[in-house]
Length: 531
Image (tube, rainbow, N blue to C red; front, side, top):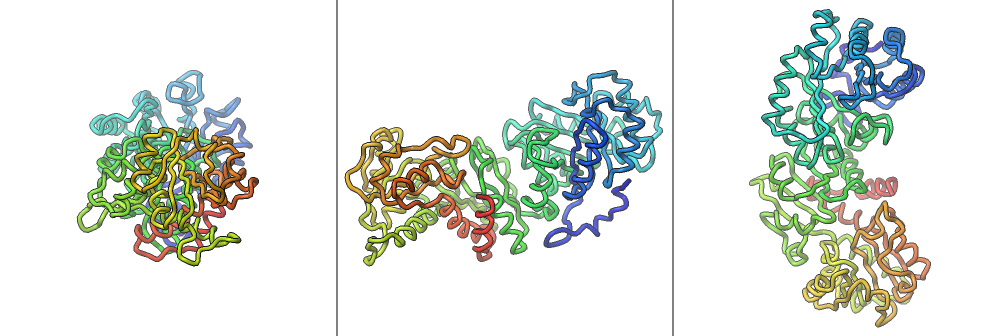
């Protein structure tokens, strides 16, 4: 049986430096038998967890004293015993007194922690009559599966939990918006007792990672994807290897990619690995944002310093900038935002077009029969852009800068015409694109999300129309080989992956975020591994 007391924080070294926070990573262990639980506990230890949560409400034919003695004896890590009833989101449906007796036994046989729900905490403390081993701590928890209350209500809840005699406060709420986590951070950072403060759901992910920055007692990391004890839980591997959780400190700078949807983004893999490789004290998170204004207003502290922007927030991001780079202003969208350290002003940039256009030009130069002696390989080419959003504007603007003749195809003609007029080009509807073939050897660039996971069978243009194009680019990069690119290849066109745009712009954004030269080979390797 292991104890946290036997593992001094100063001895815990990982990766490229000493551990920079005291927040523990707890792996929930959920199985039907003792043998399966023991197996999962060993796996948690191998994966790097600090402790395990024994979710005994998942066990079949649970015999409290017999099973807990074995589990605690054979656990290579400190233990937290949770026997969650259905009325608090768990699986136990039986007699309440028997459940509380099992928790009392857990204390008796050596559990390091037990979790007791606020609703029955006073009753439980009366039941054990103060008989608790010195080494054992009682977590009193409250779970809100509907929303995240105002700061005042969360503060009151902390006080109520403290009043029960709890050693550790646990509050878990539900994120309806990414800004909900800020209220929990506010309480967490001012709490005078050890506190677990987590916000459930995909929009609450940042609470599970940044709790290390704001002083949380622990966070939960699942053994594998999908094997979660609460919505939005990252895996142990993600916490340790993707987010470099041990290296998050109170002064760590926060970056992220703002979009909706955002789960597909490869950017956290790129930037966190790149930050780590140069020893930069920063973290990069996927930020599932509904309102850009609300997000920026809420997370306005100097430590929230840099963002990438993706669909559909590139234009909204521009409107929130204090200053905008002239190219981004011409395009009408940003894909990079930096908080200037001297005055906190938000600076907007667009490097989308740099990434995509340079990748397209490189590929064109490699094609036989392409004459580019006079300058850009795009000069004089008919360049068809699908989509008139932020990425569409960037590609249209970039192609025009290189001397291409631009045509914009969009679902709504008015939006296509509006963009086309800015770049001196033509406009057609998406429906007209199928039969649009004024010449052969055209360039096609899809900047919409059509074909992105999970709708991988979708394509913005029928295969038969692709024979008129010499090169096709798709900004979608999940999957890397979209249906559009596969059919373009089959039709004889050269293709350029969306990952090429991503990698080229990653070089630029990394340098803006950190002030360091981009580790280009590492970034390419990370993208290849996560393709």
